Image (cartoon, rainbow, N blue to C red):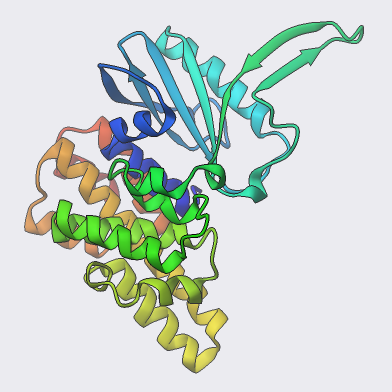
Amino acid sequence: MPKRFDVTTKSLLESHPEDWLKLLGIDAKLVEVIDADLSTVVADADKALLLRVGGDEILNIEFQSTFEIDMIERFLEYCVLFFRRKKLPVRTVVVLLRSEADRTTITGTLELTDSASKVYLTFHYDVVRLWRIPVERLLSGGMGTLPLAPLADLGSMSIETVIDRIADRFTSEISPSEAAIMWTSTYLLLGLRFPSEIAVRLIQGVRGMRESTTYQAILQEGIEKGIEKGIEQGIEQGEQIGALHEARSVLQRIGSRRLGQPSEKALETLIGISDLQRLNQLIDRVLDVETWAELLSSLN
């Protein structure tokens, strides 16, 4: 099952691909988001969003918040499978969201050798260590990468100032409804660097976040119950509820772009889904159907 930050980062990538190219320093006149679901080939593969860059190259961006001993080998496997499916060169970029995901073995090159120590395969990949990127670059960058700013190199800037700068841009550049979604992404990414109670404190006074249904669920269902049963247990439950709300938000946003605005009946059906796995399955199918009715019929 995808982690919460997986859904968040892939949603930001899907909705603002040009901003990610800018952050990565990739110059391309054409960028197209394409789907590449490897779940039928690789059992542990999440749904992947690829960028077709310049019409003749595939860009695969992999996000990691923790270190996994086989992750580079897994990205090599994905690279080969993507090439087999798309018949285009594949460039892999590994975005490490925090230092806990880093190791000295992550060099940008994986070499496989035989018993005679002869290299028989070389896999090159790019590495972006987010905590080394100056925060100003993200604060002044594209809207699709702005929620990552709290994970960057803050230098002498306080996290409170970073949140204020984000709030200024959300207020002046996007609609309140979009800002509520972006604040949800910001909050969930904050949790990779700060404990939940600190993340809540940092943004609890932000107007846009107060309007976010995900935040309200986390705050009310998580923290209020935490007062009764223990803060840690309450926050954990709130995060689960928040994940449901975020998945619904992602499904509605991606679905609206492909299928048009959902009817009232479709919205009622979405709101009534309380199974996170089922919501993720609908997100996986949204690019394969033509109408909301066809998508939601799989629930029957």
